[in-house]
Length: 341
Image 1 (spheres, rainbow, N blue to C red):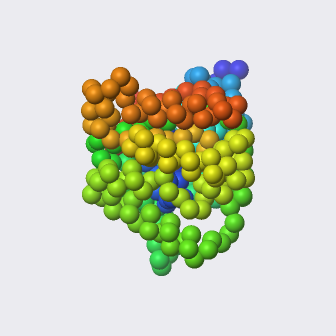
Image 2 (cartoon, helix red, strand yellow):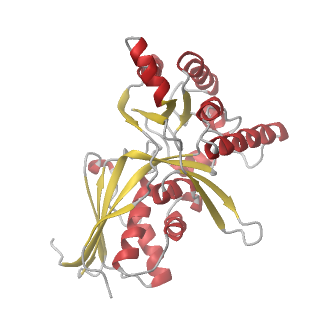
């Protein structure tokens, strides 16, 4: 069925790596690729309609009650009176359910387009806050990265309990390869449910030290410290690994062994991206290029091969690898049609 539309806005939105290392719900970073494009149009149909295209279109929901972008538009309808009749089109190039923040990117794209189309006057932090309303537990880390770009630190205002986002520019020499396995994970909300409500004092102190060290290293563009510290989470990743969240056979012992191999042999830090199962491999671009000149293969190629081989030993395969960098830019308007005046 065709519906006439009047006015359209398109946004480009990057993927993200949230729960960065030990920074569960606190640290996130934006990626240059993959990305999605989101187009929002007003419609005369009287209802909200979601359309998806791209390589993952067949496995992404178009149900407005479930789609993160449509849920974010519902929040805007309740708060700002944004029309309920719309067409939301998403060209999906971020793999779904792989821990790369697709739902957060969808929500950010929908809010940013609505902000322009209906002249809501929101700044980018407000875009992130509203997009988070479509996420499980309203967590901010992935939407902050997709909206604002860069490396993000999420906290709460001590008096109001409102969310606060601090965004830092990632080091220019920091590269990342995202290894996407063919592991089907549970929903993000399900992987949150496996985490206990409390941790030991030792785990708390250890992770606090890691998170503080990583934050300072990003502020100083200290890649060596970033790579040395990122892999070590004493709580969330080991717990999820033991619960089977990252695939059959990927328990905490297997995961730690892999991290140690990558760091010692390749000088590369491995983190689980978001709620998994994708792996993010962080490295110095200059060191990698230097190794490429001295040997047949680069450090990152060796690390990817190591991860792929270990996954295959458990009966898993790698579906895709993205060689990319952190993005200093978040979501941007790609094109605009007629906006309301």
